[in-house]
Length: 219
Image 1: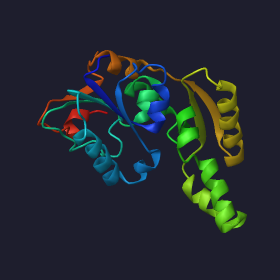
Image 2: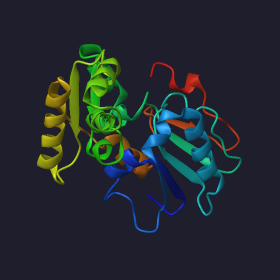
Image 3: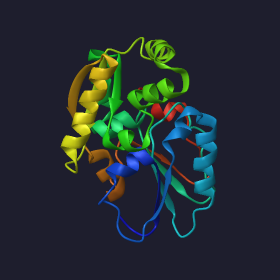
C-alpha cells in the first residue's frame, strides 16, 4: 500500500478494512443506504472520485452492486474494482464461493458485522415497521419482503466481539423464522486490493475509460 491510493468503500466493507489501512491514506466511506438507490450511489461515488487529490489510483470497496459501478470514470485516476457481483463475494473471499452459496441456498439473506452495525437488516426493519404500523401490518410486510428467503447466513470475518454479533444473527434468524448458518469469511480480496495484487479478481479501469458489464462477465 502507498500514499498514491485512495479508498472509496461502502461502510459495511470499511468494517473489514479496519486495521489494514496505513495511516494517512485518503479514504471515503459511503452510507449503506445508498444501495437502495443505485443511481444515487453512482453519483456519490463519482463525486468522491472527482474530488480525489494526491492519489493516482482509486480502490473501490464495491462489487458490481446493481450496476451502480458501471459508467464511473476519471480522466486522471486509475480505478480498481473487485470483479464481484456484489459485496458478498468480497466478504467470502471470491465470487465463486458466493455462487456456490447462491446455488446451494438461493433464498439466503446475508449478514456481517458491518451490515449489522450500518445496514438495515430485516429484523431491525421489522422492529421499525412494528413501531410505525403496528405488529399485524408489520408481519404482513415482513412476509412479503422475506417471501423467498429460507436462510439467514452470518459471514464471520473477524474476531472482535464475534460472540455478540453471532448471537445477534442467530436471534434475528429465529425471530424471522429463517434457518441460521454461520459461514467463514475471508479478507483475501481486500488484502490483495490493498497490496496492489490486482489479478483476475479485479477490474482495472485506466484513466479516461469506464467499466462495462462485459468486464464483469460471468460474475
